[in-house]
Amino acid sequence: MKAFLYPLWFLFGSIFAYLAFMHWRYSDDPFRPFFLREPKDSEDTTSEVPEQDKLARKVVDDLNNYVEKMNDRLRTRNRAAAIGYFLAVIVCVVSIFLIYVA
Image (cartoon, rainbow, N blue to C red):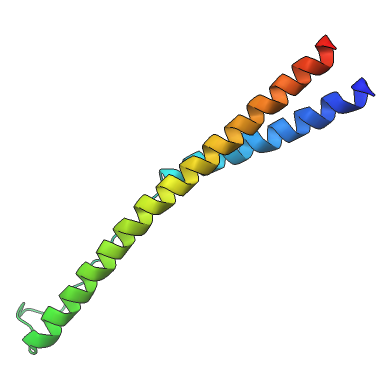
C-alpha cells in the first residue's frame, strides 16, 4: 500500500507546486491602462468638439481607475491562491515523509 501512496502524493504535490507557481506569476502580470490615442494624420491638436473630448478623457480616467482596482484585487487573489497551493505542497511533502517513517 505504501508503494502506491508515494507516487500519488508526489503527483498531487507536483500539480499543487505548478499551480502555486502559475498563480504567483499571474499576480505579477497586471492589465495595462487604457490610453486615448491621437490620430497620426491630424496636424491640429485641438478637438472640434471639446465636450466630447472632455467626456472621452473622463471615461478613460474612470476606466483606468477600474483597471487599477481590478489589478489590486487580482494580485491579492492570485497571491492568496498561490499561498494556499504552496501549503498544499507542504502537506504533500509531510505526507510523503510520514509514509516512509511509518
